[in-house]
Length: 277
Image 1 (cartoon, helix red, strand yellow):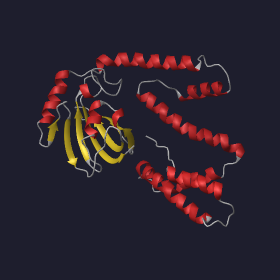
Image 2 (cartoon, helix red, strand yellow):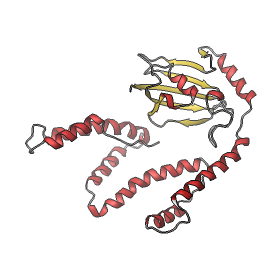
Image 3 (cartoon, one colour):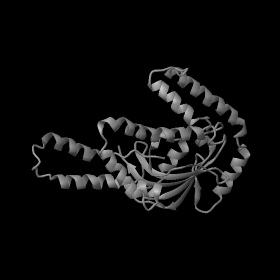
Image 4 (cartoon, rainbow, N blue to C red):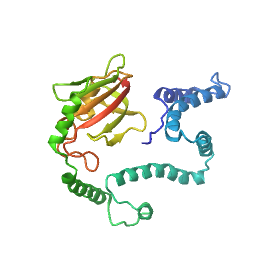
C-alpha cells in the first residue's frame, strides 16, 4: 500500500512566507540551514516506508537517494517521461488491486489502449460508457461469488461464542467482542476524530483478508459500525483485538472476493494517534 509523501502544512506555510519575503541570498535563513531542515522533515516521512518496503535490501537507501538526485536533474524535454514513471507506479498498483478483485487485465492491451486514448483515438468506449461497463462487470462478478462465499450463520455464531468465553474478552451490548492486548494511555477518540492505526483483519479460520502495510488514517465515523465502536474503546499507544459480528460489519452480503457473507471479522489494531478536529 503506497503512501504519498507530503511536507507537513507547517513546513509548506513557512516556505511560502519565506519565498515571498526573502530579498537576497544573504538572508538570515542561510540556504544550507533551510536545506538541512527540509531534508530532516522529508526523511521523517520517507524512512518508515523505506524500512518497511526494503528492510532486507542494504542498498535501498542509496538507490532511493540516487533516484531523488536524478529527479532534480530532469531536463524539460525528459520531464514527460519521468511523469509517466510516477503515474505508472500508481496505475500499476491500482491494476494489481483490481486483479485481486477479479478484473482480468492484460498489461500490453492496457498500454496500447491507453496510447490510443491519450492520442485522441477511439477505444470503443467513452469515459462514461467505460465507467458503466466496469461497474456492471464488478456487479456480475459480485453476484457470482455471493452464493459460494456465504458462510453459515451457525458457524459464525459458534466462533463468536467460543471467543467470547476466552479470558480477557468482553462483549458489548451490541455484540462486539473486545480485548485489551496492551492498554494505551490518554484520551481515546470521539466520533469527530480521525485515527492513525495499523491493523490485521482475519476471518474465523485465521485467514488474513486485509492488513495495513504502514500506518493508515481513518475517520472514526466513516467505518463499519463494529470498527467504529471498537475504536471508541481504545487509547493511543494501545493494541487491541475486536471481533465484529456480521450485523456490525458487512452483513449477509460481505464484499465480493474479500469478505464472505455473514462473516465475523477478527481485527488486531494498534492505535498510534488520535487526530483531533
